Length: 327
Image (cartoon, rainbow, N blue to C red):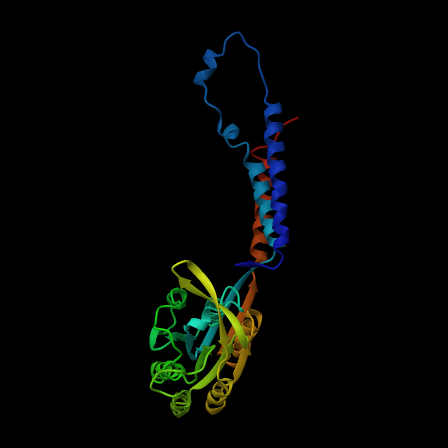
């Protein structure tokens, strides 16, 4: 039940002072009789007419309530909705090498990547999403799942030191391909984020890309961080010290991976650009939703209008017959 004009329901608040006024007037109009003793009157019970003397007022209040509800135009809705959703499979591939601790993205490259990726995951409620992490080696942190709360918790738990330092891009990409290739979704994509060049692992990045192409998997590559000298925090016996390191990565290799698989290459030099990149990918890989909706509303106000007329008629009848007041 819905109301076409729900603002009229506020008129019901006007009945509150009306009821208070009635109670006050009834209290003032009570008749009194002075006698020497009233003990003998206790054996007489009030008449039925006295007990039910408030019925006309109650009927009037009910009539006003019904009239106000009728003015608000209650409507009964008869509707059905069919929604067909086709999700896609997405595997996130996250670099956890030492240079990802550089603070050109705030607070550092790893934490900025996790924050932006979390927003991306929350914006894709209908998709199967998984997570692969890599440094010198690679492993699956979370397989494809629609339970995004679990995925985000597992994503937040990854950090530098989880794997020996290194950058095995080809191994991380191949691991992601192996995890996503058997998915049931028609569309499969991998989002690979790294700040380095492949320097370890048994699989070359372009070889992993060729495998992805064979299974019809698009790979979006993101090169994160600025080029040149960056400050990277290093744990020492004296505490955390900052060490200057050269930040360069094989941009051409990332472009070749994206071009070969039908994806795109992006460069993120700060957190805001990284966020826009994920938003662009979100637009490129929109989930298809087909919705059929039927909605029919029927007016129900006349029932309340009729009820108001009945209550008003009863109030007039009882006030002029059973509960008639003689002057």
